[in-house]
Image (cartoon, rainbow, N blue to C red; front, side, top):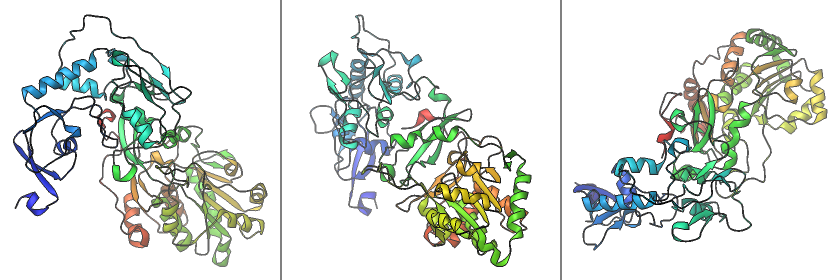
Length: 529
């Protein structure tokens, strides 16, 4: 039985004599790409409307009098497509030559070199010398379009991907094509700037190096970058992303092309979060304001926690940040609920913002509020409750796993009267200044684990870079602390913790760890797309 007999929604067709099937009415170019058939294109993008203006995906379709663009053709039952005849290849070469007529061919200094569609398709489909014997049309260089984007108008091949993105996805038509013929150029309308909160997506979808990111411009060659798959921690949307890094330094975050998750896109704010994470880090443990070894810091914290027994443990406050990985939160809640029975659990979370939108960005800036709450199994109280308990003198010890705990000044002053304030954090702050024990922790780009979005989707993070100094994952610090306390809270890997939490946390029972891949050097970043 054929695929189409099994599924009447599929249509059978052939490409170069090879029988294929695809959903009826689907885009022919998409169907060919899905079946691994090589075909060139510039203007088409699966997340945008079809304009069929680059004419680079021309094919022969039996019964049609002339070549047709595959991006504008629909899969029909019995369709016969020829994609590699001499007629087709000659037409593509001619269209490619037109595209290159006024192109500056400055690949050695172009940021897109190594991941440029024009460069790749020239080498794949033509690779012939130029026949141009006249001066090329000159256009603007280093055109400042907005706070994040620089344009080289000579490199632009007028595919209009960026124009369509701004109008259709960002709902902010801040780009347009002006002039005509050879003198057509990409620009902003009079009085406008390219400053919408999704503007950097235009750099991703530009098939050449016309649009460049000011932060990434001239920083590193893309073939030196490695891509590590992870999850953006900029808000509760949980957009899947790639971390591009080289020599233990992150250079950019880009979206993974998963239409059912983040629609091919990523907001500018999420892309920039790696900058703050990399600067001003805590790298060494501290005890009473002085640098110390991890063992000395853990001994100090364990000594006080271990001295509280029975009802006295009600005086222990354990604060979980809404930016912890699920694995961190699970280990912390096991420590608090099972081994330090009676400890009070609190959630440290950033308040909702007005920056959310109808595209991707959530008004909840906390990447894992839902996952942390699920791991705590209904035992979490708010930061306001913590402030009140401090003011009423109900706590003797405060143990914090977060950079996000914001207390009013009067509550911060109450910390001076506690027997111990221990903080696991990645960056200095007001709380760290008042802590007796500081334990440096990793940020999300440095850990393996999972987070759960506001929509309930659990996704895998992978470590892209190594942490600075002595910084360690939150869960690992807690496991070492538990050993000091003589407890059996012993996990060797994040995967082992994940397997345990799937059994014990009802909301996360259906979660999946995801395919295991090496955390470093997953692939050459320039191969994306």
